Each structure stands twice: as structure tokens, then as C-alpha cells.
Length: 135
Image (cartoon, rainbow, N blue to C red; front, side, top):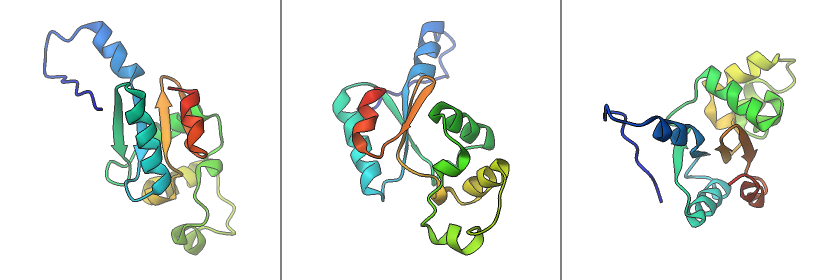
């Protein structure tokens, strides 16, 4: 279930903008089984949510920083270290948090998934049951 909100309406009320900010969001990779399971949890919840296919809609550096903050983790904890890109380009190197964030923006496949955000709280959907704690 998806809710479409249009910003072209000049009469959009403040409460609708607030609800958009509070809308659940999933950073989703359709090719990932866990991500598809996470999407199914949201669909079954009956609550409106936004799907961000982050391999196509790559988050900005600021968006990724905010996601990491909502998760309450370090950038390194959001990395998929078994990806070939990480092993080939970065493994064994001492990287700062900013360099890790830059790597995830350059190669979004390195971002763990699914990530579900509700307001200012977020979880990585591994295990999938963790999604239920914030929706």
C-alpha cells in the first residue's frame, strides 16, 4: 500500500507536511530477499510508507548521515563488508567515518538493507522482526 502526496497543491496543509515527515520510509533493494521481506512487513502493516530504491535514488551524504544517526550506529556498522567492491577497494584500509560514508555513496551496494525509518528512529531489517519495533 502506497500513499502518494503531491506538493503541487498550494493548499497543502501543515498537518499533511508533518505527516509526510513522519511517514515510514524503507531503503529497499528489490533484488535482496531480506529487503523484499521487509517491504512485505510494511505492506502488511496497512500504514502508508515510501519506498526508496537506494541503488537508483542514491542518498546524499547528509541523508546518509541522518540515517546513521537515526540508527544510532557508526558508518562502519552500516557497511556490507562481504561485497566484492569493499574487498577489492577498501578492505584492510583505515578509513574515517567520512571516507566510509563517501564509499557508500559512491558504491551504494555497500549499504546494508533494508533500512526502515519512522520519524527519527530507524532499524536495519536484520532480522526482519526488528522492523515491527518501529512501525
